[in-house]
Length: 204
Ligand SMILES: Nc1nc2c(ncn2[C@@H]2O[C@H](COP(=O)(O)OP(=O)(O)O)[C@@H](O)[C@H]2O)c(=O)[nH]1
Ligand SMILES: Nc1ncnc2c1ncn2[C@@H]1O[C@H](COP(=O)(O)OP(=O)(O)O)[C@@H](O)[C@H]1O
Image (cartoon, rainbow, N blue to C red):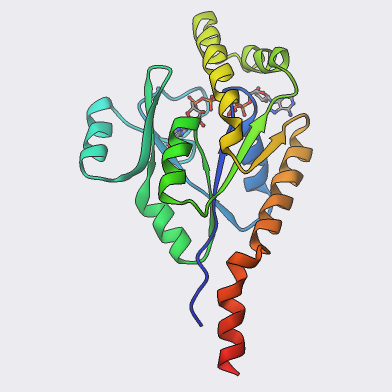
């Protein structure tokens, strides 16, 4: 029987909403969802590990990846470049495994063009004041960068209607449970299963 392709899941949301935290919590659980590690020209934050959080690249190396068609999508975000290495995504999906991409809105829309069947989830903060608190408390950004990210955040939130689902990240464990529930439901959608069961009946 033809192997079912994995599900491509995109998680976006404004800076500081908790995408990294929620993804890390999801990764810790035994969910069978693999994680796409992006390439970026941003400098590593304290504690970030090359190849785990990001593949940290120079601008020249990043440009070379674009020229060699090694990125599924890429975008410039608050002065740095970010992109999704295409090979790992393709390999994972063709092995029938699910993969999650934690990427910003412009990139997500490009992925949508290539993978209309993907599952697009937007993570929302409980309020904009709470969003700012989270960025401030994380302590990784200067005042200027916090303001830039808040401006971008408002534009990003307006793009929410391009997504299939909106998940509030009030508490990490609740957001994780919601995402897991959405993924399970997506696997049960009839348009994903019709082919599989048709073959099953025909094989009888
Ligand atoms: N388009 C695109 N965006 C990415 C990629 N990797 C990360 N991002 C997004 O880039 C933005 C900035 O990421 P980062 O500097 O790590 O900060 P933070 O996620 O806001 O804490 C976030 O919205 C990420 O989701 C990628 O491969 N492609
Ligand atoms: N549900 C939550 N409640 C309170 N704080 C949170 C929650 N989710 C994430 N945070 C905190 O908010 C900050 C930003 O989270 P992070 O995962 O880095 O966001 P993003 O990847 O979306 O930029 C971190 O300090 C993180 O610990």
